[in-house]
Amino acid sequence: MTEAALREAICEIGRRLWQMGMAPANAGNISALLNGGRVLCTPTGVSKGSMRPAELVVVDLAGTVLDGGAVSSEIGLHLTCYRQRADVGAVVHVHPPAATGFACSPRPLPVEILTEAVCLLGRVPTVPAATPGTTDVSEALQPYLPQAVAFLLANHGALTLGKDVWEAYFRMEVLEHSAQVALAALQAGGLVPIPTGMMGRLQGP
Ligand SMILES: [Zn+2]
View 1 (tube, rainbow, N blue to C red):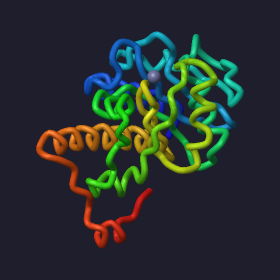
View 2 (view 1 turned 120 degrees about the vertical axis):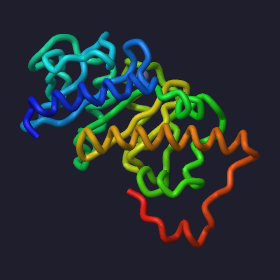
View 3 (view 1 turned 30 degrees about the vertical axis):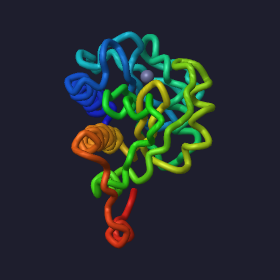
């Protein structure tokens, strides 16, 4: 994908996330790797529902701005993912209401009730609470990062990884959908896990 096409894709994904209520006000940030160890990231203080391609910011892996204005305050979280995992090409962080509800509760996200969640997300660890916009968030994530492609951030939101920006985005859609289904199941009478024999045949990411 060219840089111009990637800028358009990030703006389109931002619109979808905002429309689905996952990025209220100016919340959320999206990034993707460019060639040469550069990262294209959403700017700070801009609604994900109305971003323009020229507003996106290019930084290096140390977080130095190479092109554009002020970068997202959570850029450190994104750079930690790229530095620690060579298989990651894009990162999406938003505040989806149902998934964030689990991140604000004592209950982990029950992935084991839905085949789609098992196959597309695998396990979804909850990363302990850390102050947004500080290096604490990256430090809290680091021990969990090798284990999964989707994470809940306690008292905050959710984070998904992908080889490209569409994969990271679709994982966020599946994460939020899975959380909504889990809430509906709890209201309907409780969670029923996938039978063990069937679970053993499912392939995670
Ligand atoms: Zn956030």
